[in-house]
Structure formats: structure tokens, C-alpha cells
Length: 222
Image 1: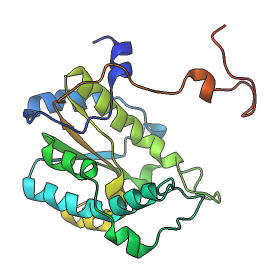
Image 2 (image 1 turned 135 degrees about the vertical axis):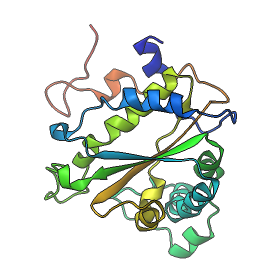
Image 3 (image 1 turned 90 degrees about the vertical axis):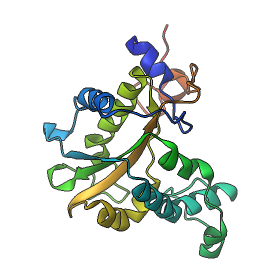
Image 4 (image 1 turned 90 degrees about the horizontal axis):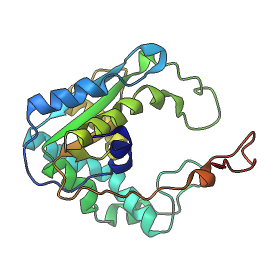
């Protein structure tokens, strides 16, 4: 596929046909994805390929930790898990909230589940001393995750990047033997899409790009 077509059609895929994703194809996907940039080119990412059904069922159980809060906050009109506005949803309400199917079915239905971790000892987290949530470390892992999705799209497969399991990092660490010092970054279920979207909805450039200052004039093509 042409690059423009790949980036315009790589959607979040959560429904799969059940077709297998052979190791040979998965290897090609990861072989292309590995050229993603990372801080200092230290390449501190590790990918665990999970096919075992029982392991995936356990991952579904662990998704409940963050998934129920996510769903409860959405139902209350909040932006889930944001660090600026404290949630007004009670723990009891969170516990009583059903876990949405779209957060769990991909982990079971996908041909394979990839678990991405990041070695924190090689990350230059330049925002670690600021009085806000850290985001810089993600620059050394999420380009790889996105490359996985782009490469999968080119092969006719698809998936979605989810961070819901990060709230249960200690349990996932024990389940998969993730060593201390490695952070759970995200999980990517991959499979053959039931339907491949061809038109994605995104903001226009003028809606999120300004010139010279944050409050500057929108960038225009003319």
C-alpha cells in the first residue's frame, strides 16, 4: 500500500474474523516496526507475544481494574483518568459498573496479543521533576506501538493500542514475568479486521496547529 493510504486507513480495530496471524507474518510486522525512533536510540522496548487462551482470560480479568473506572467516569460525563479534574465517581459506583465488552473482547478474539514494556533505566524522562504527570518517557515506546499498527495494516491486519491494563501493572508483571524496572506501556490485540475503515474522522490541521504561539493564528495551506 502507498504510505498515505496506510496512515489514512489505520483505524482502531476491535472486531476480528478469527483468521490466524502466522508467526511469519507477525515477524514481518515487527521487523518493520522495529525502526521506530527512541530516546538516544536506546531501544528499551520489549514485546511479549501472547497466544495462550488462559493468559488472555487473566488479562481480561485484570482489565476490570481500570476499565470499570473508565466506564463509570464516562457515564458520569467525565474525561476518564485525566489528572487535572478529580473524579466525583465513588468507588462503590465504579465497582458496580459493568466492564464494557469493547475493552475485553479484543483480548480474547484477536489472533494474538502483544504486550509492550519499556526499560525505564534507559529513558531520559526530562519531565520527571515537573509538577504534572510525566509524558516524555512515552516517546521511547509509543512510536514502536504505532509502527506495529501501521505495519499490520499493510499486511491486511489491524488492532488497537490500549493502556487499560497498566492500572494492574503489578499483576501483569507477575503473570508475564516482566522484570523490575520495566514499565507496562500498552497492549495491542492484532487480527484480521471484520471491516476495514477507509475514512477516518480527525480534526482539520487548522483546528490544532497554530503559528508562533499556542494562541497564534491557525496554520493554513494558503
